[in-house]
Amino acid sequence: RLRVEFITANHRASLWDAPVVELLSRAESRSHPLLAAQGPDGLARPFNRKEFLRRLAEPRRARQEIGKVLLDQQVVAGVGNMYKAEVLFLCGLHPRTRVSQLSATERRCLACTIPRVLWKAYKRPVWYVPAARRAKGKGKELLQIYGRAGQPCPRCGARIRRFPQGGPKRPAFYCPRCQPRQRRGRLAR
Image 1 (tube, one colour):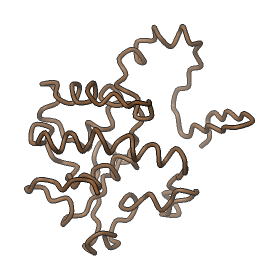
Image 2 (spheres, one colour; image 1 turned 30 degrees about the vertical axis):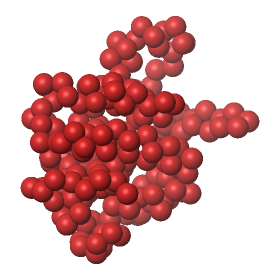
Image 3 (cartoon, helix red, strand yellow; image 1 turned 90 degrees about the vertical axis):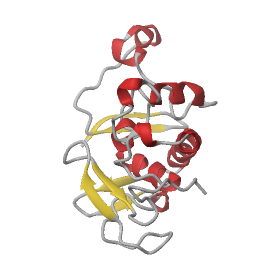
Image 4 (cartoon, helix red, strand yellow; image 1 turned 180 degrees about the horizontal axis):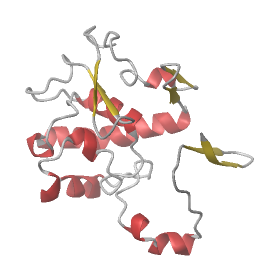
């Protein structure tokens, strides 16, 4: 359900299924408690990788699953469920991998892949229609794994799997061969 849409001569921004919408002035946004705690913006140029890695390394996150942590807007702002799946796929990381199990290389892969995926999505918007079980929009080819449970992985051909992670509206999608739970992940290509 569309909640808010802003249209200008050059841009269009649509907000879907938002339970709460607050419109703030620039000054109000600087002092808003939720916004002040927000992690680095995944679309910022340049993306603050150092701050993302610092927040990811906070001791309270060590035992958390990376699939849940990427949705935490205090770690990184702007990663939603669709792009969480794509980032983890590109980095070869299983969504249930604990943050403490990530190598330095895997953490850097996340820091490099997040802005790359979000900018592609920004330039070629896509949305997923659960009832129709398909993606729509210019960038639907960006979704290599999200919403494709039971279909072959575009990289290796194994069947993509799905499990609930963070509630019924937050399923995780992964390839059991490209994103194994025990083995270290592959770097983004």
